[in-house]
Image 1 (cartoon, one colour):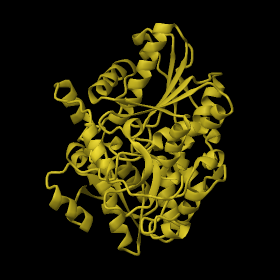
Image 2 (tube, one colour):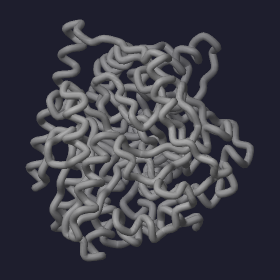
Image 3 (cartoon, helix red, strand yellow):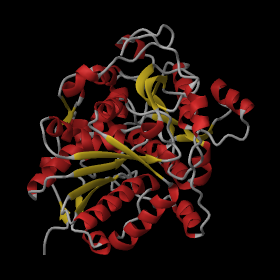
Image 4 (tube, rainbow, N blue to C red):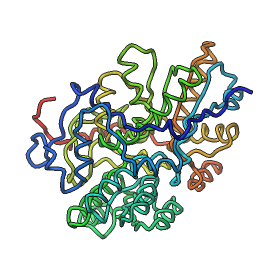
Length: 454
């Protein structure tokens, strides 16, 4: 029987993270201090982040070694499996070969643990005893709770209100690993209180939750803030996905024609795609497709500009594709993709034309998820189903042309805590949202006026 599951031995797990900044540094611009609109140096980030993470954030070294303590924790579930989706291929009657990298097998159930462990570790060895963070669907919050438990740290999670209410078992998982979790906006911070006073019925947003987590951290000497996506060091940690994938594809003599991943802030996409970017820049014929919700169309309808990473304007200004820092998307069920901005590294690649982006509707992604469930057997997170939708569409296009192309996507997390969303889909109670252009235009008017070049 031909290979269905492509494994790596534990000793083949990557020993260093790949830093894409080394290969595209001429396309990058610095973060700006929100008080001065001037480039922010590393010292400006010290109130928020561990020094080792700041060094990684600004590094242009191509390879950064993974500490042994992290490798030992990674070995609980890494290397992850690459799976040939043969039954999906048969169902679609496509000549394409479809593979997926299964990141849903980590203890928290998603790729987020790849960066949660390093972030907790580096803070721990610096003497920080408490971390704060935001979470959308709860995948990042539960991953960081897992990591904090491993390194004996306290955790405070601000969970976007619509997901807090819709995904109770993610909250439970956070608490099982010892974390504290509240719905955002909350009454624990000044930024949360201000939003609640202005918008008492708000469903919340990642931008609001980030503001609360940052405010919490900067008012306590024992605390640092952590982010599950967007920042350079987060993208760096996730490259274990793509580095393993390259080795697995090499072992079966496959060359990918298209790599696909969902994107909210960019970490899952970056983890898979960034290790392949040097190949494409060197002339390899492959496409990189970022898939986002049509209701939160950051890459497809956003503007490439400097913007705040949060609603209350606490964070540095980042050059990225953005819908505006006060953008609040509809309460779709892919809660991890409801972010107004994108990773500056991913944004640079999009601006360079290296990455393409598409937006898909909620109904279509759940329809794709159901096909995947009925063929491959596992239940994907709604976020991951965005990649499945695009992979199916690519395979159907190959069916029309007869092209036997190789399609690879990441299954970034499992959906076993998303049953309420699937139940609404089965009961025909989900709605599609096309975000009005006038609402995007209104949000764009509030972008900061930056004179800095680049």
